[in-house]
Structure formats: C-alpha cells, structure tokens
Image 1 (cartoon, rainbow, N blue to C red):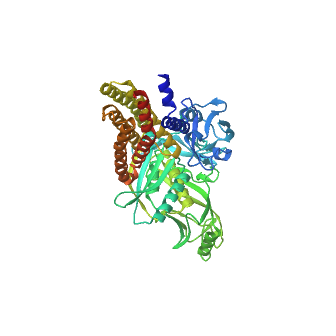
Image 2: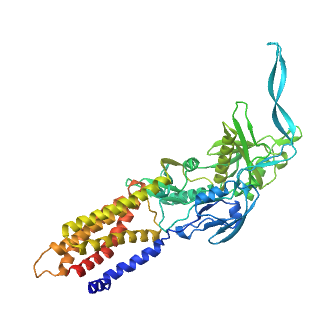
Image 3: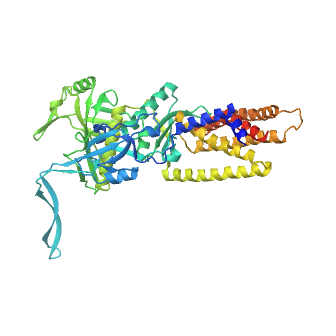
Length: 568
C-alpha cells in the first residue's frame, strides 16, 4: 500500500494537480475567522475622505480592501456593529478609527446641513375670542413670533463611509449572492462601439460621483446584434439611480434664450461639502398654501473662464429692475435638466457684464411631510450636482429591465447549494461504488471532484470573476461533466477490451479519445451562450469552459494515474 501511495504521489500528472491545488488555495486565501467592517466606499469630501481614508481601488481582491477594526478603542467585528455604533454620534465630535492600515482622526459632519438663522421663531398659542354668530366665547390656535436667541444646527452625524462584513476569502460574490440592483440599458439610437465606450465611462463616473460602490458597468449585446449596457450595483438598492441612468442628463443654464454654460467641461468644480452645499439656510423648509411641504437647497460651483465670459456677454446690456432695497437684472438664470426647466434664479444687478466664476445654484424638493420634502430636495441636489460634474451622455438610454436582489436570498442560496452539493457528491460516490464494487475507484473520484471545485474557485479569484448564480451553475456542470469523464475512464479500464494485447496505456488512450470529443462538443455549445441573454449567461459559459478545460487537462489525467496505480 505504501509503495502504491508513493508511486501515486510521484506521478508527474498527480504532482501537477497538487501544485495547481496549492496555487488555487493561495488565490482563494480562505480565512473563516476574518472579522471587521470592510470599507466599500468613501464619499467625496466627507469626514472620512478628509481624514485620509480612500475608496478601494478597482480590481483589488476582496481581502485586500481596508478593514475597520475599532472605533474609539471599541472593537468592530461586523458591518452591523459599525452602523449600530455610529448611529448616535453627535455632530462636530472627534473620533478615532483604527483599520488594518493605520489610525485616523475624524470630525463628524452633519448629514443634513440645516442652519436656522432667523432671529425669531414661530410657535402656536391658544387665544380666546367671542363668536358673534354663536354668541359665545371660543378658543382658537394662532401663530405668534417669539425671539430666538441662538442659531441651531440640525442633522445626524455622517462619516461618509459605506461598509460591509469583512470577507472570508478572495472569491468575489456577484449580484445574485451579495444582493443589489441590476439595470439593463439600451441606447435610444444606433451607436458605434466608440460611442458605447464613452457612455460606459460616463456612467461609471456618474455612479462614482453619486456615492455608489462595487459597480460593474459593461457593454454587452445579443445574438441579434443589439447593443446594451449592463449596470450592476452590489450591496445597494438605489431607486433614484434608475432615473439617473435612464435620462441623458443634459444640464444647461440660459439667460433668456442664450446658453451660458452646460454641465461637464463648463463646470470645473461642484461643491459637495457641508459648508457650501445643503439646505438653504435663508429659506429652509416650509409649508405651502395647499398643505404640502417644500425645501430649498443650494450649492456653489466654479465655472470655466470661457463660460464666465459667456455669462458676462449675455448679461452686459440687460436692464436693471429695482425691487425695494435690492436691484436685479430683468432676465433670470434658467436651469434646464433634459430640456425641462428645474429652477429660475434672479441675477443681482452687480453681476451684469461681470465674468464671475463662482456662482451659487439652488433648487427645491417637495413632499407630503417635511421629512419627505427634505429627502426629495437632497436627492434632487445630488442628481443636479452629478450631472453638472459629469456632463450629458452622448445618447439617451432606455431602461429595458431592472432587477433588485436581496442579500439574504443569496446567503441562503449559498448555504443550500453547499449542502445539496455535498449530498450529490455522496450519492454519486455510492452509485459508483455499487456499480464497480471497488473503493479504489470511488476515493480518487471524491478527490477529483473536490479538486475541480477548488481549482475553478481559484481561477475565478485570480482573474477577478464574480461568482453569481450563472457561475455556480457552470461549476455544477463542470463537476458533473468531470464525473461523467471519470466513469468513462473507469469503465474503459475495468470493462474495456480484456484482450491480453490491450495495454493500460491503450485503454486510457481510448478513454481520453471519448473525453476529448465530448470536451470539444461542450466548447462549441458554450460559445453562443457567451453572447446570449445580454451577456447575463456569460458567467455560466466562462465557468463551464474554465472548469471543463481544467478537468480535461489537469484532474482527469491525475485521476487516470491514480486508479492505474491502485488497480494495476
């Protein structure tokens, strides 16, 4: 027995399998004890960003991303612990964050920048009055002004960090496993490959500016030649992103009928910091005549010198209108988003003919409650900031399909898939043992099946391929095909031509002839799936091709060598 084991381990085919397995495990880097809150995204100009914490670079492995270990010396073991701990942070408080890369000091900022500057505030009081029609004294509620001695900052502390549970390996989880939103977009008109690449780059920039992370934006197509863009946002459920993606996002500012600047190149800087962006302190939120609520936002931008000159030329000869102690130009600055007027700003008389590069943009939001109006205003502000930063898309996009997947479903699926996979392997081994009645055939088969799964996951980790439902289906197909090939090898050796002139080498050669024919048939079948379904089946095709190829050239030869040594 020891000599057979020695001969097996020294066989060059088995040695190759062992080397590939070790490299695959290194690529996967399993660490089931890894704890902490891994940084998914850092909001631009946030407290975390100003402290030096950076968003993860594209293309990095899951285990290489920065991980929060403790806050104010309190250990953080999961994303839930992080969010629970920072939920009640007061504003303008200094905190210390420890990560696996160092220490950071942050000053918490308000999530909503609302400053009440009024010298008076309004309160409801009860007053008695005599109703002549009823001929009796009644009570009524009236609103009175009372002095307000201070200004107040309202809001919740925001560090600008989005985190998730620290990964336990380098296998990237796709949208179906980690949860999130998938949006399929189709250009409104025929576009070239170059224009499609521009759209993909612009969408990536928009989503990054918008504050989303773990984004996959790729061009795709179907077998009919139609072109699509697939956007996958892992770990997020952002309904407002659908509107942002579905519109061309053309921003334009006009004075009268003259266009003075557009989003993109004309705008060199858009402020997102709390001190120069947020709810307008001079107007804030209030109730309208119809009982609804509205809020006003404002943020500052910097124009290019060329755009400032355009605005100066458009306002140089405009008449001035006096309104009380203030004077304005008779034309307003009109803000258009996708050719729809979103706001109209009065222009002070002192700006007429002046090439001003620093200007303030404002807008509003509404809702049935003050909180709804506040949220709507901030969403509109962020959308306007994003479009002004990135400019418009070269073509309008139509949303073909939107899928939202819960991460809880993905975790449950992984658990069930692993349990069913183990039961399937056990069932296959029992059937093979029942048919051949030789444990020397069953044990190498178990080793080979587990080896193929590890090698496929190792290759996926190495090339950065996401593990989604389609990819898992490809792994199952690859392992199933491997079992079929191993049965062909075992059957050819044990039940093949029993002539004394047929050598072991000839039997294995005959088995691999059948295997190679089946292999090339599978490859031909996978090529159409690579492009079918807007590329959503690409993961299935890739994992099947990689898995079957690794099996045919690595694990199947090693399996044949093992049973040859154990049965010969």
